[in-house]
Image 1 (cartoon, rainbow, N blue to C red):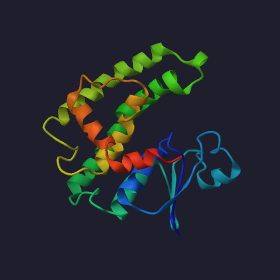
Image 2 (cartoon, one colour):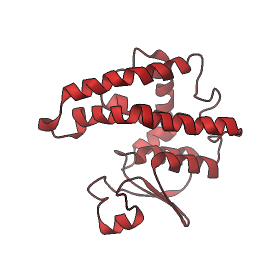
Image 3 (tube, rainbow, N blue to C red):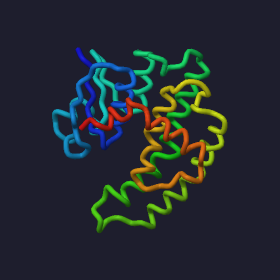
Image 4 (cartoon, rainbow, N blue to C red):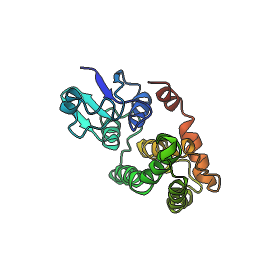
Length: 202
């Protein structure tokens, strides 16, 4: 059975599409739109939580975008999954860091600058979220001093997962120019051909 991924580019499914493109795996994309297509009885049989992405790989059905990417990197390793247990733990650490420290703030910016109807947007909330992002931006900027990747070597699933979250900054018009190491690293990640191929999907 071919790999199947449920979700669209304008959702967290983008990071899984990016991973699949990096790995060069054949897959079928089922373009389920959040909220519109995730509440149907058929989809809720696949993911009762009613969210995308969902990965189906043979008999495995897996939810949660970060878990999907860690699984893909491990199973179909083409250099994105590190060899040492220590670096594998760092992949998990940075993936969780991206979600826990930055994703909610970036989503608040997107909601109030792009996603909500204009009459429901609150720029004050967006600015509050931007302010909250400054601390994690400093953390990763300082960490990346003198480095080209989060593990200190080749591009890995850690870079992909964190960059897939921080890429939302550009969509929300959040300036990262004050953090040159972050800006350099993020630009290199999102310049990869696999990211551009994923963006070209539905």
